[in-house]
Image (cartoon, one colour):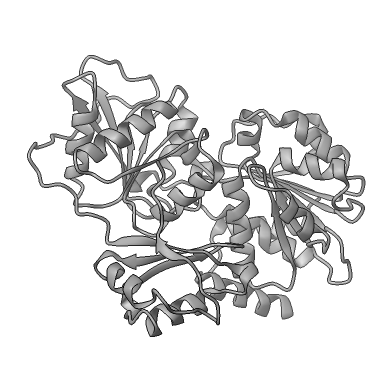
Length: 442
């Protein structure tokens, strides 16, 4: 009964009415079987599917790391951490990833978490430093395992797993069934749950947009002008092209941003925050943006370039038409180009009209605050300060994200100047913080 009540509370905290079929099967299987392979599409809720059974297996009497989750990217690590914190458990969680100072992580690990989430490179570094003990790690989770292999983390994962002497449960997750599992993972006699065919294919519409010019930027511009100012994720194959497209759209009056693996971690995080909170409606990205990112459900996914492999096309499209929602994937193709074999024949061609008005500017702007959790600030503090001292209405506020040492708040563009004027000389919780419009990622 306690477990049922706990699960009900967790689902309520997450704003979920009930587990879906995949999550229910995963919960039952992970708890009862030694090794589980869970294959399920992007956006189907895999994170909760493995966190729920892990929670039931953790012991409050053990004060060292009990479960290790290995992920291919910082963004996925932070997303899993966020879900765990929203669940409202009594167990500490920490994340470890490259691209920022290791000192904060070392400080956090001095009081070990029950759940440790990390990227392969940074976890290997911590194991070499002996930052945490591995004797009590009984559960290993490899999330987006296929992506970790693509990114070349095979050797690091082998090293990490060899340092876990007392594992008695392994969970491997992937959004594709086309993954070979190396022997060192130890997944022999595993149970496979394959939900990759459960995707709501009928809810995804794929349309062809023919570009009369080899340079497809004008066609992309006209397409965005026809989407009723709704947000879109635009995929291309190269980092420099993502930046070029963003610059050209900006020059034509469409405010956009770009996201790729060559950017600093801080810039990557800032651009995602702006995309999440509605202060940026168009994000141009490489395939790095196809999986593992905490971004909202998209009604529109645009392929400026098509990927070489069908599986990558599927992952990109997984950003829309999720969980029975409707969505459209647009393929922009030069009139003389041949489409790859994996694209179905006879696609509906979308006729674009030129001269449509520009999309509306984003409803929100992102406000930067120079304090976070480590400064004892929380969302309630920021909301109260903006309402009382900033004289805003609650409807003027959007998504607020509080990090360790900084925070970001979405505020309606129409009241940003008023807010900044009203709080210029004010203190929040007795301290003066730098509060300004967040800088753009350039």
